Length: 124
Image (cartoon, rainbow, N blue to C red; front, side, top):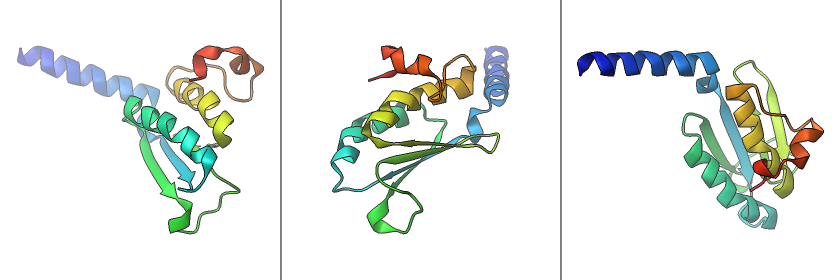
């Protein structure tokens, strides 16, 4: 039994170090009075539950000073030092899961590719 647990732990550590998702963080900026933020809120909660290894930061812009142009805004900080910015109640639900999947599988189209726009799989 001990042998299987050790093997499981080693395989798990290798998997997560290989995909590099452990260094990924997501900053979600919202305002409590924003109608578009309220539309996106359940989707963000689903993503937080579905991707627990991502460091999620949910930031109320009325409680601090943040350099964002509007709400809702989500900024993914990747393990290769890139920032991916998604803005609005259409763009965030449409592309966020696609971007997260791309970072772990490298097989998913990104928000910059037309292919993702036609795949209803990525739209909740």
